[in-house]
Every structure is written in structure tokens, then in C-alpha cells.
Image (cartoon, rainbow over all chains, first blue to last red; front, top):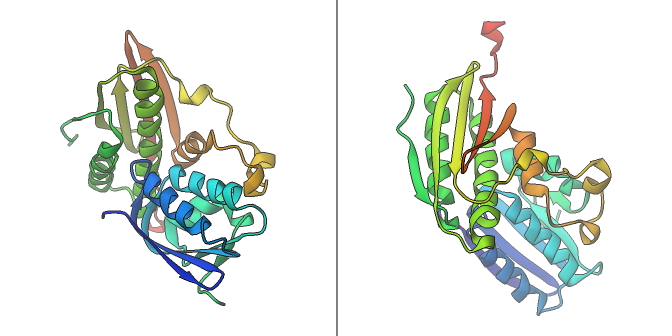
Length: 106
Length: 147
């Protein structure tokens, strides 16, 4: 399934909806969306991943990039992670570094 | 029955085709959904490293050949390329301390190989002449009916 990343600004929330398969071939598309979000100086970066069917480490590296680009003032939320994508976040320790939630706002 | 080998250009836009090949082989071999995903993830990560670090960083072009064989109660996926010699298994993997750091302090490198090694039951690397051969093995899990 083709990868897609769409950005929606809602006040201080930068909401990015991801779908499809996130591998190294398309990670630049995700990174570009994060860079666009950063130009709005958001307080929260909220990633909706319910429809993300695959995520390689290239996707994790964009999360690291996002935090390093936006700084500590930005909190990262990952919404709707389940199955193997959730497992990848847990195995790599990212579940301790982002807010994992079923919905946003809670 | 083993599937016919897949040979693709060593380019990132071929990763999806490689995953599809591994997923089909894994399902045919009777692996469960979780094992199929994890095997495809591990192969994807190694193929990414081959493309980026074995070929592109050195200005090289070439192919990745993927084939599968029944092995050890499961399936082995064999990746072969003729990029520069690179043993992913010899790389230092991030430890528990690194994995628990906040994102702003995380190192970017090493995550892919860590995920690959964490996802399969066995990994072997061989340099055979001018060829890198990476073999990733996933065993079938026993169901309650088989115990």
C-alpha cells in the first residue's frame, strides 16, 4: 500500500496522519512533512498511525529528527499504534520517549 | 517448494517488492502473521543497508538477489549482493542505556540492524568471493496443538 503523510495544523497541534508502508524509500516524504510542521512552531506533534501497515527504522529516525529539529518544547504523540508497528516502537525503546495513546485528545 | 529467486536493482524503490516476495514465501512456509512481518522487516532493514552502504555510498550500482530455502523448521531468506563487504552482525548494537535515552539524545545509526537482529531467530553473514551473503532464518512457532 502506497505511503501517504498529510499535515493538518490545529492551533498549537501539528497533526500528521500516516498511512501505508513507511520504509527508507519514502521516509524523506515523512521528513518533509515534519519539516513543514516545524515551520508552524507547534507545541505538540501528533502522529496518527492507525492505518500504518509497516514501519522500518527509517520511520523511527524521522521521529528522532523531529525531536532534534523542534527541541524539547515539543511533545510527540503517537496515536493508534497497534500490532507490529507498536511492537517496533517498544523494541526500539521509543515507547518511553513519546506519548502512546489510543486517541487524541485522550 | 522453494520460490524462484528475485533479482532487483539495488535501489530503495525496490524495497516494497522485496518485502512482498518475503511475505509470500513466509506465508507459503506456514509462518504465522507476526513471524512473516518480522522476517520481512529484518530483510527490509538489511536490504536498505546493502543499498545505501554497500552500493550508493561508494558510487556503485548492482543488484540484490533474494531467495528462500526451507530451513530448521522454518524459512531462511538469503540476500546476495556484490557491493562492498559489510557484515551487519559485526556492528555494535545499541544497548539498553542507548535505547532508553530521550529522542533528542539518540544516535541515528544502528537502529535498523538492531531491529533486524531482534526480529529473526538466526542471522549469518558470509563473504563468498566478491559476494556478500546474508542469511536470515525464522522458525515456525509451535501451536498449543503441537505441544
